[in-house]
Amino acid sequence: ADGDVTAATANTVRIDNSLGYPAILAEPAVVQMLSYSEPTIAQATTFGAGLTDDATDDRGLDVNWIQFPSDVSGVIHFVQPALTTAIDGSSNYVISCFVRMDDGGVPVVGTSTVGDMSLSINGSTTAGTAGGVEDLGGGLYRVWAYSAAPPVSTNNGVLKYTTQSTRGFKVSGFQMEKVTSNNPSSYIPATGSGATRTSDVYVIDGTDFTDFWNPVEGAWYIEHTPRELSAGLYVATINGNSTTDSIQSFPFTSQHLRVQVGGVDQADIDAGDCAINQINRVAGAWKENDFQAALDGTAGTPDVSGTVPSVSQINIGGSHTGVSQLNGRIKRLLYWPTHSDNIS
Image 1 (tube, rainbow, N blue to C red):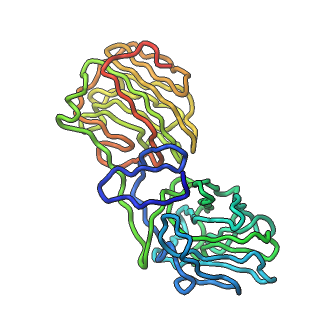
Image 2: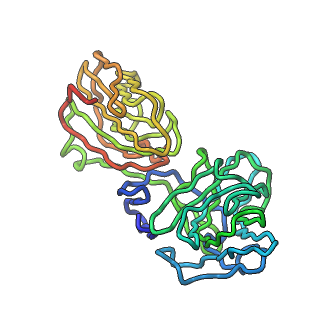
Image 3: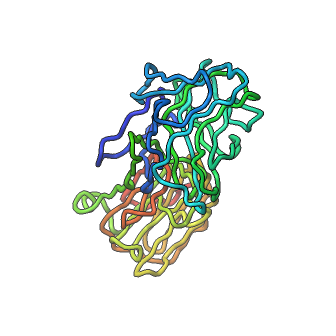
């Protein structure tokens, strides 16, 4: 978290440090809907005297910033990057961008009368309560706003009203995306025609898996930070290349350890409710007739009847088919080839 943004290399594990610790990103495929994510004034729709390009403050972005003046001189100022993928009028969307305040402080995203700036989706300004502010360190922040099923519009961007604060700031790294949560995914650069990032797929199979796997008993401990809660998304799954023979954990209010053999549940343990945008610490242990799970130190009810499936791989942050990603971060995954009688 030093205020830098580093591009990931294709076909490598993507590491994110924005929360102050390294974590792998486990995200679904995402379309960056904007033509330019880091536009110059000439590459965006802008209004207001005093907006200027600034290419000197890259901090790893290595592109242009647009400077909003502290004194808006009685005139609204806005920057609207062009869409390359149209809003469909029925899906949910998030707009986000990087911000650096001239005074180095925290940006305040507000309505047209409060805050330092407003974010617009479909031409309507959205307050910070409908989005968020993330501190990336070094005076760099990421701000975002969410809108459910907005009408079709091209008016999407950052605005500064005459009734807002006199704090100046720079913006860059715009992103517009269709979402199932109200949070943005990790940043996707676009240099003229949008961009698509494929889903993160992490799998250990073959002898890399069988060399450490104990088919009789085992345990794991996982720290994950999801952006949404769903029994259809995966924290991790140990499986036989199917869901019918598997050991699974989901970012949800239940199913912290679900075990299936031949498509029949052997265990399905609820240890409490996972939380969005914070670390969840989930543990699980399994052997014949002894299945246990815990979430943040609280144990669920053990299941004392069932067998362990025959498996051949582990998928981290997604399903065995390479979809249904966690949509978040995984800080740690530990595996032991022995059962634990106390996992809380």
